[in-house]
Image (cartoon, rainbow, N blue to C red; front, side):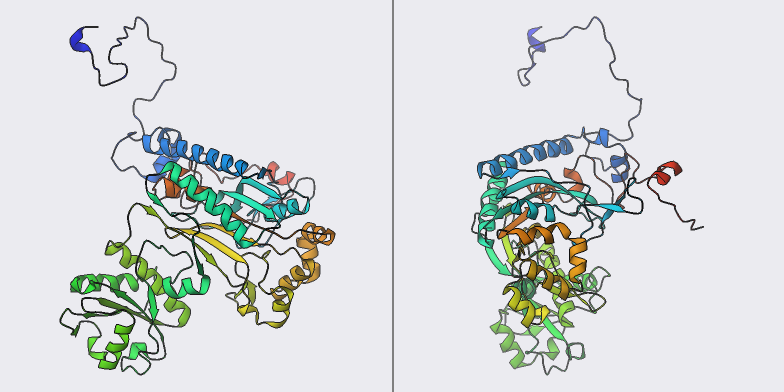
Length: 507
């Protein structure tokens, strides 16, 4: 190679290849459906249809390699902690775990169906009965849910684990060892170390309006219902009043407040309006609903953090709706005012979830996981208002995303029957739907507890991606369709006959 042809900036800069024959091993059409490794925006549906080409994109390709390394790290760490990896069945029974099941018809058992597991819940509890005291697996889970940017439709993976003779704190210690270790290995961001902050569910809803708070956002929600109990402002009368105090918010112009009002009344949020006012630097109150704020009200607002230079946003509605709207307004304010702390992963545990909630039909239903142990045990189930019973249930939250969910399990058949009875199930229902657990619990079951960090969401966070489809090799689109494999699809009539299914003609 001539001296002037050398390029020492690349590894092969001193090597020259002279070809005397070229053989094309894989032909390519002249025109690609889109350019690979370009900054040009490409429609997602086109990228998903040609996913085999999209996977050549350097960023996406690296995300899939990162996922592989994270999975290996999780397995290595769980092995180090003496957990045993055990696979559980994919064809299982239907179980009420908060989402619709995917049903699989049985050819050999006409009229009967398997269900793809929403989680390996019953199986991992049965493993505890079987004496495998520390179980885990990278488990596929199947739920017929609507897609979101942070939720893959149809199927997802979680680091499922369970331990015998374990308390809630024992589970937390495992998570606090495994999760920060994994994050630190693949990021240069600051990562919270354990023990993580514990926030009761009720407190999370009061301060953040959501049970998965982003602690990078310094804003909190406060209650001002009593302050405005006798207000002349009609929109506040008889309502729960939530306020968000924004330090230095008085610097914002009228356009900012109008835009926030538009956000609040959008269909995604559902507020009737968003009241506001400013505490100017000179101590005066201006803008918005300032004329309705008396001197006594001003002093009360100062006690909850309003000071010269701040702005205050007010949300008025019935209690639960006011909490929810305030939570969404808080998140949006954090984004628009650039208040979110950068390059950091902040974790917290949400604890003390309610055992039950009211369904849309007004009946008592499980609020979280039906197999959880109620706090207070059988006595609480028999003597307390169901809506006042708390459960040993918990979530791990990271930067505003639910990253894991778990519970201390109900291992007592008497408590199990009573818990389901309150939710409208008879003992016969429990025997029929959860026969394996019900039967196993008659033979001496150790207390046990566990959790299941979501793998897809963990990779998404570590990769600093805003879309979970960017960390899955072959994802489905926003309508739960696989555009590459063209699923779901129509099947042949004979296939339906084999599994004893006849489709109705809806024409």
